[in-house]
Length: 500
Figure 1 (cartoon, rainbow, N blue to C red):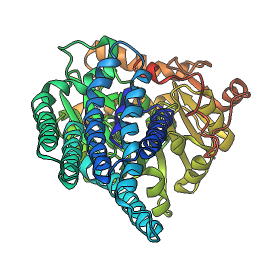
Figure 2: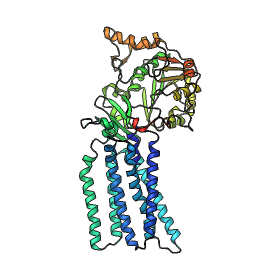
Figure 3: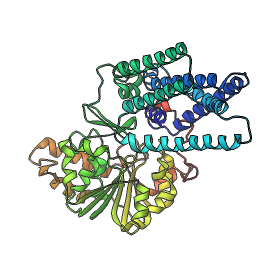
Figure 4: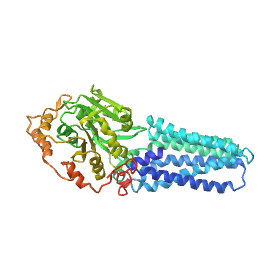
């Protein structure tokens, strides 16, 4: 569980990272079991086998502990794949232990099958509890560094117990306990330097400099969120927006959020799936027509960060806003009667793990009954033709706003004058978006409104495109389904490209 978090982060939650880690882990387990077979063929006493188990447990946990800082250093100079053998090595030592433990503790008599079943049951219970305690409990309260240290010390404690259980001679016991003491001392003293700048190294890779540090970091079971000193947000090791709600310097292209007021005539009830920095939610919540806003966010780690930034902190106190920490699909299924004028999803990059859950044909069809008459779904395609093709394949009407796509069962039209009226009087916390007595502000307002006069076929350009053009342009693209997970397994996307 911990290793997957590390490799997932370093690849920007690349979908294939889990396959790589699992493959390396299983290869190590298999090789370790093969070595164990060779050892079991040797005629040794059960105590000797227990000594082997103790040493292998100790080595596996020390190597497992060192994997995080090793990965952080390696990716500064090379591909993350070069660290996978370390996963195999640690898993190999673990793979050796179970057969040796069985060999040492199960006598070859008529109760061998019964005793082996008890060992196997304890193995399964331990595996399940380990996944639950680490993945669902500790990761909500502890950092990766703290979790890694707890696991290392637990493994070392287990090795110590096995050394005592083997009832070694005094000299042999001294060697074992000395090794344990050295490992405990090194882990305790070296952890601050080994894990210093861990996430900065894994994110920036070859661009890392010691001066690069995140301002804030939160870790929950749903992922890691880092905030740079310039307000840039990184979620799960990849760009995830910025704290900005203004259009004078639109560094996070939040103008796409303001566009909702241009193509929907009267957005009153809004659903936002995915909160992140809260910038988009803050913008849309302050539209004059909005009556209620429901926000569903899977990672609670964003909430304390939003509270630290004045641009968006009032969102948490807005009486129109209700925030639910939940999975988007699950929330929709549990609230089957909820309907909205606009559903907005600032979806992450299309190649990341689990994005199919928000981009597939099945999900888009699930959205339909949650839209009121004339309602619209507005979501980020991140420039993928497959995402565009799926959207216009499910809904008859569509409008592209840069790399965002609005889809509906009703005609969508961008109304420049309506948009001008909203932007001209728009305020957040009593602060106007544009000061119309300021010529520079008026010029910027007109520049934003000029979007309504720009039409093209390039999602990387800030312009508009209607459904007919989108269908023609993406006629050869794949339709994303829950089964094919189309964008997640694109062979052209490589995990080391995530930062770029």
